[in-house]
Image 1 (cartoon, helix red, strand yellow):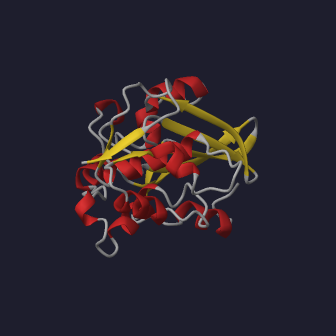
Image 2 (tube, rainbow, N blue to C red):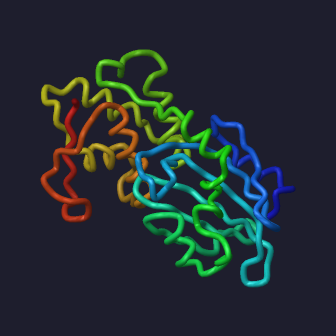
Length: 227
């Protein structure tokens, strides 16, 4: 996988409303492709939407390491010759790079690009799209949230807007989110965990809250209420 491959570059840049920049880290050139913010010091206050990439050798072959911060974890995907070879997940950048067991002379935060001064400025300036339920019918509001949280995770064939139309038109403010989302997909389709996390982030930032009396993973039922 090379950065001279225009198709790969386009996939990495697709839908990113952010101007990428490069950080030099010894022999590594880490390119920051996306920005997000959170309240988590273990992520240096970066958040969902943060994305960086660099090239290095993996199993003796030049490969691309794509680093992302998602809803609840940090993810590193390793691509060789355009093929996903390995995915690592952990609660923070340092932990995920301990799992990978490479580049141990740098902290995971540094490899992600999170300790760079310019990155910290960008994190402080980052704006995460959000709205209230009253904004759902305003033109372009939900579309902005969709582009930020969901567009890269789901098929363009999924009629995501139907979820909010259903919610607006029903009498109750409470929706069983998991079932409502599954109804948008073809029968038998299995939604992966990354898609679920993207959906939950989308709905939360659209002004809804999880009222399910269980911790994540304890129940397949997920009731959300409009605030």
